[in-house]
Length: 146
Image (tube, rainbow, N blue to C red; front, side, top):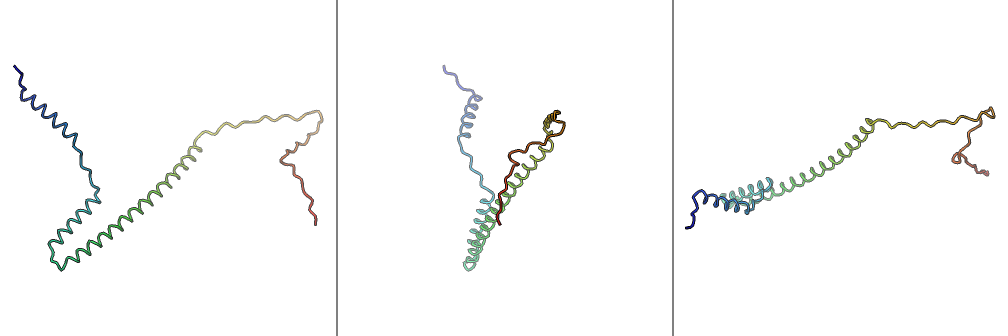
C-alpha cells in the first residue's frame, strides 16, 4: 500500500515549484524616464498622424523633426551642465581638503621647541672673541677693471 499525499502536502510541493519558477525568470529592466517619455511622445505623434487628414501630415512630420532637434539641444545642455557641475564639485573638494589641512594644522598642538644651550665664552682672555664666519658667508670679490 502506497501512502497518498494529503491535499496540504500537494500544496506545499506546488508552492515549491512555483517559487523555483519565479526565481528563474528575469525581471525586465526599467527604462529611464527620458526614454519612456520619448517613446510616449513618439507613439502619440504616430496616432495623431493616423487621425489627421493627409494634407496636415507634413506638419506633423515637421513637428516631429523640430521635437528631435529640441531633444538634442536639451541632451547637449544636460551634458554641459553635468560637466560644469563635476568641475565645480572637484574644485570644491580640493578647496575643502586644503581648508581641512589648514584647520588641522592650526588646531594641533605645537611641537615642543628644542632649546639649544649656549656655550659660555672662555674666560681666559677676558675680552670676547668674535664668532668665526661660516664658509657660506665668506665671499670673494672680483676686481672690476674700468
